[in-house]
Image (cartoon, rainbow, N blue to C red; front, side):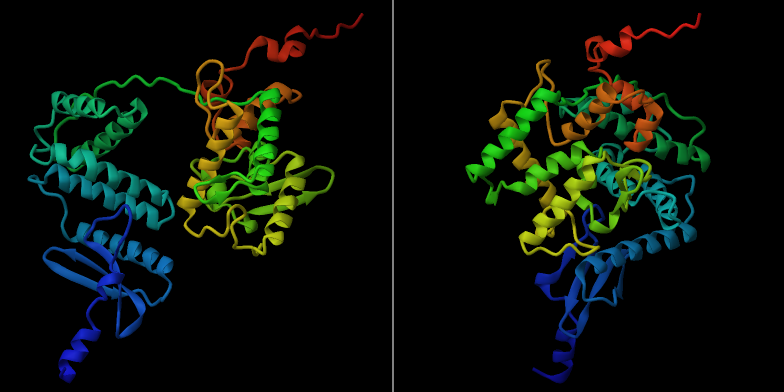
Length: 406
């Protein structure tokens, strides 16, 4: 092989290393070269191939670099190519993603929004509207789109999310003068479907079942069900955290406070809603200390940047999937997969239980304080969490009488 051929070969991507970025266009990839220890990123746009070194050998850092590289390309293209009167629905959709990307770069928008919106566009919205001029879109077109989603048995909440994205695209088109007025949007009636929770007796039965399964050394999909799952259950019931918070929870996110009041102050890196600190129940402190001791006993590091639960599973989506599978096995053995009213129970039910315990056992708990600590709203508490409340659960408060002075 000649010197020029060898040089060219060393500058070509290693085929096995080419990796797509989840939630982004397939044209965006990262890859390795024989000639470099760093990852490179590549994107096809406007009949051109844009390449750039990520300056890092770490794949996770390279993926983050590639995402920023892609957003910068979109910003440049948006500034150079403003929307014209002939812009298509697809072009308007891309412009919306670009604008949201600008907000992401300024830290004003959750990066997950663009990923989720791209998935909706690629899978459902663009294939349906690609041959329809944005000026010609009417209520009839949008309603036909809704019916297609209904046929696929999508939940009303998911259909509403698709409609919200279409509405944002049409709003952008109107702002840019591409359409005179917006078409009416179909109404989708949302049916609240609160998750099941555990009353005190059911919670005790759940915990006893966990102890039994640990003694029996039950294995769920190659993973032994042990004390880590027992601690995870009690931790969630005492911290109000969502499963998505648990998945990415690191030791540096947790601060132990042992003063007049004893609690964990939990500040996660991100949140589904407002990212405010969470205050745990007093028992949360002892549970967290037990978790640390457990991980050390398993010869797992508990450094600040290590994950609190299942830290040995580096792929965090898989870690959460493992937690859910083990919890589902526990529910099955305990015969608690559904409530008496037919509501399904999942790992999320532990958060629901934490909130319901405060509503039924707390002394003069006001909904605003509870909602803010659980990173939700009073409306959500009333619609989804407090809905199972019955008068019998708070007989003392119901029958209480004001003291009168003589």
